[in-house]
Length: 381
Image 1: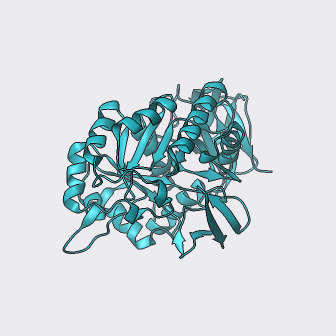
Image 2 (image 1 turned 60 degrees about the horizontal axis):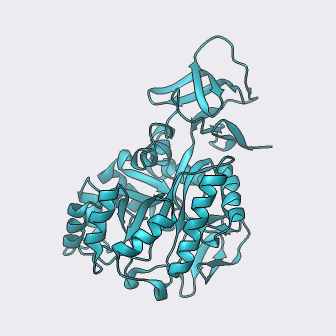
Image 3 (image 1 turned 180 degrees about the vertical axis):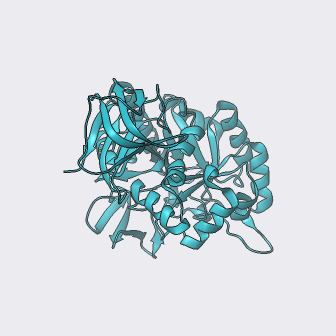
C-alpha cells in the first residue's frame, strides 16, 4: 500500500495530523502538509504503532504447541484483528519431544514463511524449568529442573530464536541457567515460582530482568516475606509482564504495579489460548482440558488457565483502570516490548525507516485497520 492520508499519528514526540507514506515494508515519510496518495477514512482516526505480544500461546483454534505450519500461519493471520503485528509464539511445559517439535516448526516457519500477517519475531519458552508447586496451567508431569544442556537443545532446535525463558530460579540449577541465558542475550524471566525475596535478589544478580505475568503463579507480597511480587515492586532491574484483563489481576493491583514501576517498565501481554475469539466451550491446553465460560478459561479445580484477552482490550483496560492516555497505554503494548526484545530499531514506534506495523483506531479506540510490514492484514467492514 502507498500510505494513509489525513490521519492523526501517534509519534514519539506526540500526536500530529497529516499523511503517512509507506514504501514496501517501511515507513517512508510522515508529512504534515501537502498531498498523499493513500487510504482515506470517513471518520476521525488515530494511527498507533502495532502491538507486540511477547507471551501468547494461541488464538482462533491454533496453539504454538500444535507444531504445524498451518497453525502458526493461522495465528499470524488472526492476531492483526486485535492490533498485534508481532508476537512470540509461547511454548509450555510438555514432553521434551513435543517442545522440540514445536520449536523446529517455528524455526521452519520463520525461514520459509513469516511474510503475511503478524511477524514471528522470536519464541518465548515458558517452562519446563518451573516449580511444580506453582505450575498453574502447566502440566506438572513434564516439569524438569533448569538444565543448561537441555536448554541448548531447545535453543539449537529453535534456530537460536528463543528470546525469553520463563523459569523458577529457586529450582536446582536455576541461577546457573539464568547466568547462561544472560550470556547469550536471552531474557531470563522469573515465573511459575515459589522463590523467596532473597532468592529473587539472587536471580536479579545472576541476570534475571523480567517477571512472567506478574502477580500470577509467583510468591505474593506479605509483610514478613515480600516474595517475588515485592521484589518486582522494589527493584527497577525487573521489568513486569501484565495480563490486564481484570480477572488475572485486580485493577487496584494493576494500579499498585503502575505506581511502583511506571509505564516504561510494564509490558502488556495476553497469555491467550486457542479459545481466544471462539465461543465458550472445552478446549485443549497442552493435553489438559480447559473450560471457557463467559470468556474465562479454567482447569478443573477452578485454576485460571491463560486468557482469552485481546491486545486492544488490554490497552483499553489500562486506560480505564489507570486513567492513562492512549500514548501511555500504547507504550506498554508496543514500545516497551520492542525495546526489551531488541527490536526498537525497526518496531515499537512510528518513525521514518521503521517497519510499517500500524494500527488505525477510531474515536472509541476500536480497530479500523491493521497494517503489518506495509500490507493491510485486517480491515473492519
